[in-house]
Amino acid sequence: MKLKTSKLDLNLKHTFRISRESSDVRNNVLVEIKHQGLTGFGEAAPSPHYNESADSVIDTLSRFSLEGYDDVFLLEDILNHAIETLSPNWSAISALDMALHDLVGKKLGVPLYQLWGLNPAKTPQTSFTIGIADKPEIQEKTREADKYPILKVKLGTDNDEAIIAAIREITGKPIRVDANAAWKDPAEARLKIEWLAGRGIEFVEQPMPERSEAMNRLKQESPLPLFSDEDSRRPEDVPRLADSFHGINIKLTKCGGLREALKMIHIARSLKMQVMLGCMIESSLGITAAAHLLSLVDFADLDGHLLIQDDPFAGVSYDDGYLRIPDLPGIGVTRNPQKPQNDRTPISPN
Ligand code: MG
Image 1 (tube, rainbow, N blue to C red):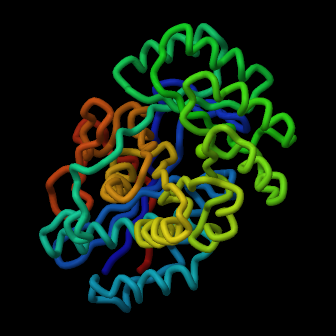
Image 2 (cartoon, rainbow, N blue to C red):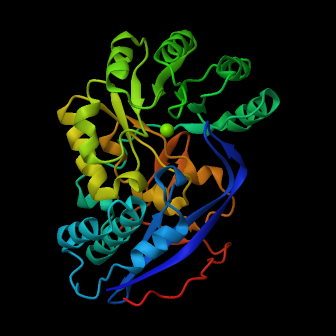
């Protein structure tokens, strides 16, 4: 098997701002694994929050060889080897995991959801994200998001109440809130959550950085369900979060891919926790890969591909809040001809 990496720069439709950063372009990485005339695709969406970049992903994968493997069905062997040698570069491992799963599905001629025995019609509606902005821009984005039935609103500013009030002037649709760990003080977090509870908010994601005792108390007192995101990176993180959060947000690029995400779902279920499937800003490749797991989760936040211009891949289609998974082998994406691939890096030596 041959592994190839190339940069995948995604231009955003609008500047995207959360409590700790803002961006106009996302520098992702495309991974291709070629074997016996088939190509498996994977996407890494590296995050500076986890000390990752497109260059670090490409460098990490240049140190991994698939030369010794001729059987793509040895997924466990290959991915265990990848985790042993490449961790903690989880977004690189995720792209490798995605490309291998895509290849397995293509070899067998079945979509991934079918491989796992999942019902592609039994999926939750996905939310659409509104980043931090001033009132006129927030209201303009809310109007633009008219066709999306659920909003996810980024908070963690000095004017969180004004942001929610501005949106509520426009719409009464369900809102989910993500503070991205920005509320530093448990008393502040509790007051904000109590204020939000009367305003049609479904749940709050990562209100504070993890502080077990304070978060445990917040969970007991919170009138709204609390979800972890920054704290629930990997399967081994889940058990210690059960006392602090009602649910976890899983992202492929954060945990190391589809195989690790499946583990997290099962661990969370065994702890009676709810599960959300989220994403970074990704093309339809990464989003469609994640969408195959949707029937196993309670909440979906798979909107990264809706925030970019010139999506280099075609995959899931959007249908009144629901993501429809293509009935094609593997992940089921095809290259979008409108955008030439930003193929600047050479084929890696393996
Ligand atoms: Mg989040």
